[in-house]
Image (tube, rainbow over all chains, first blue to last red; front, side, top):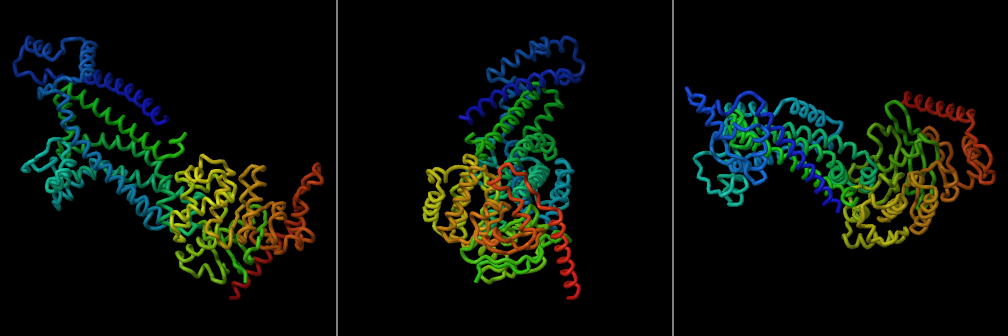
Length: 336
Length: 292
């Protein structure tokens, strides 16, 4: 019951958010200087050519009219046509989405694994040298932004000691037998481990660059709440039953300490997805973020709008998933 | 031979002594009260035995013997296992002593299964039996519940059942009724007494409630400032206390026979005398250390 109510409530607030995003992005990109027509004009074009082009893309109508046309299109599943590539925005954007999702999820998995391990080690060795070292590492990781990590990795593992690919999503020479754009996932399903390894080798550095700041946050927060939980009565009681410190951390403290961390990870994961824009550019990774930058440079208004809406859908969905996971993990919410 | 024996146990926080040459014994099946004001160190003694002292507190001398074996000479793992098998704790606050993220049943069974090597089925059957013993209706349902679905009294019953589950030889009860309603307190005390009598477990009962001591315990140790002032039988204490502080403590207990009477604090002169006694003890201790 409660779960269904939570979902319905969140779906409602999601749609309000999306409407807000649609309005804001639509008007902002039309207010800022630079327009797509000027980008397309050949040298020496006259007033007449400009008017014809404007009419072709609907820029001759008033802003509210344009907005209504756009919204009506979206409701019918049509996000318009990209000005630069003349293809439907919908298929362009959905074609790139899998690449960005795979990169973000890879980064999230890395962040959880690194951050979680550090938090557990730090809790086990609390008060000792290992914890101090983890605290310092966290501080450094947090104060360096993801794109600088990216540059550093390119220098270290792309130039000085070239072990990873520094550009693209997959080696162009490879023959891809895939029907979806979820290459990483599909290569596993088809047991094409050669392609999978090539994909991972391309994805490893951008994913790690995205993961490091999030890993530091997870390590810090989870360690803090684990340490607090380890002082609580039920942890003490478990120790008197004969359990080892490791056991108490993993079975008594972790299930409780993970809840506050989870909420924050949800929020931070959306930042991570935002970070893909620059990281994808840096590594020439063919995802949504890279496409977004191209779209902005070319003033491809319909494409920008489509990408922003899609990002907004991803963000709100992630938040919804986090809330649901929280409700599932916390018995007091589940029954209450 | 006594089951538990503390010999001249000393503990400190930094330079500050919190246990001063504490010696006491608990024989098998004995019910001993550990009495004192807040800060007298009575809970610390329980924690020292269980090995759950806060990191800041160090044991600086003395022995903790369990069946003649010195716990501090053992490896941490061996000590943990021994305590887990032979000693159990009934904690102070039942609201925080159960893990909110885990179902109640596994929390009671886990020691039997993981530490004592019972089968899961066997352990569950035993725990259901115990829950009946502590008067919990529908134990099967309660075992599947989460702690927040149960009342404080229910939770304390569950913790009592859990303490008796492994048939320990000693149970340390750390003010087990302080956090409960007055009406529930009585039931829980009666329950602890009945369970103790039925299982013949030795009980170290940490409390500041002399009324509880007189009903429940046979012997008692009076503490002040981490020092044992008196070690006596309960009958002896209530008829003719040996130490001046004990007498003052007894006089300060409100009487049912005089409901309108004013509450008496322990006189300041008595406190000063005890503090002087402790200071003299510390000085003697220091001289002894320097001489060595």
